[in-house]
Length: 535
Image (cartoon, rainbow, N blue to C red; front, side):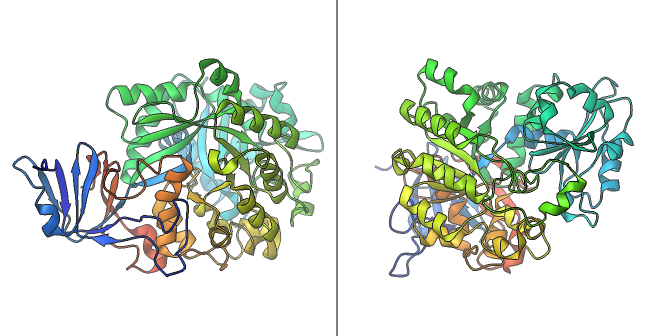
C-alpha cells in the first residue's frame, strides 16, 4: 500500500517547467512542445514530490495526518533558483541605508544622513545600491557629496554593481596608502572620492565591523523566501560567510539551499581540504571556483574590444581611464586559474562582461571539457554573433542577469556607455538559447527578485534579447539548477525531486507582460516545509 502524503497542494495551476528535449535545453523543441505540463495538484512526502496530477488522482494520497492546502486557483511553480547572488550583501542592504531608489545625489545624501548608525562616531556610515544612471544628473557620488553627510566619520556609498564606491574625506584618509590607492579616480592629481574595483574590496574589508555575517545572511534568507527563492549560488569572498551558512543550517534556520562558489583566493585551501564541487549536505554544498576577468559597465571597467561610447566624457571623473575598460584578472592569469580548478575537480565561474573579456574566458574554457564541468560565464553582457557561436562550441553555461536589461532601455546606462548598436546586441538571451547554450538566470542582487528579472526578459527591447514567459521562468528554475549542477534535485516539479515550490497569486502567462513583477508570492516551500507565507 502506498504511504500517504505529508502535504498536498490542490486546486492549483501546477506547472512542472520540465525542460524540452535535453536537460539543458532552453527553447521549445522542433515539434512545438516546450516540456512544461500543467496539473491541478502536487503531493509531497519526506520532503520530495511523490505525485503530480489531477486533484482526483492526488487525493488518493491523502491520509489522516496529511496537510491539505487549497490553493484557490493560485499558480504553483518550482521554487526560483538564483544562480548568482551575494546574500551577505543583501543583508547589508537591509541593515544599512538603502540607496537603490534614490532619484538624485541629494536624496542619496539625505538617506545616508538619516541612516547614519551606529551612534559610535568611530564607525562607518554606509549606504548600498545607488544607480546614477537613473538620475537626471547622471554622475557618481563624490567626496564633496559625502562630506555633507559627515566630516568626522568615514562615509561610503556603494554603487549597485559593487564595482564602484564613493568615499568622503575621512574614508579616503582611512584607505590612503593602501592597495586601494591605484583604484582611486583623480582629477588634477586629487582624488574625487570615486574608487573602483580593488578599492571596493579594501573598503568592504575595512567596514565589516563586528556584526556577525550570520545576521546578514539570516535576514537575506528571509527576504529571499518572500520572493519565492528556494536555492542560490552565492559568490563567496568573505571567509566568514560559509561558516554562517553552515551554522544556520545546523540550527534549522536556513530557509534555502546554497551552492558556495569560492573566490580563487580560496584555491589553496580547497586543494588542501580535498573538497570538490558537489561536496556537502542537502542544504549547503561546495559549488564552483569564481574569478573576475574585467569590471563593470557602470564603472567603465568592463573590458571592450572597442572604446566606450562616452569615453571622451569620462575625463570629468578621472584623468587616466582606459577607453576600453580594464582587466581585473589578465587572460593569462585566468587561464592558470581555470586549469588548476578544473584539474582539482571544480566547476569554474568567470565574471566576464565586455566582449573582449568574454572571448578570453571562452578561450580559457576551450582547453577543458567545459560542457561536462558546466563551467560558467557570469554576466556575458556585451556579445557578438561570433561569441554566441563560440559559447555553443565551447559548451559553457551562460549565467546571466535579466534584471540588467533595465539598463538596455532607450536612454539607459547601456546606451550612454555602448551606443545604440551595441546596446541592442547586449544580453542576447534568445540568441544564446537558439544556439543551444544552457541559460541560467540570477540577480547579482541588482535587485534580488526573480519575477522582476522575468519581466525584464519578456519585455526586452530587442528580439535577440527577448524570451517568452515559459523560457524566462525555466531559466530561473531548471536552467539555474542546471548551472548549480543540481537539476537532479530541484528546478522542476517532478516525482523524486525536492519539494521546493513557490505559489503565486496570479499567472505570469495571464497578466500583462509589464505586470509580471507585481505578482505576489503567497507561499514558498523548501523540502515541503513552508519558509514563507503571505499575511
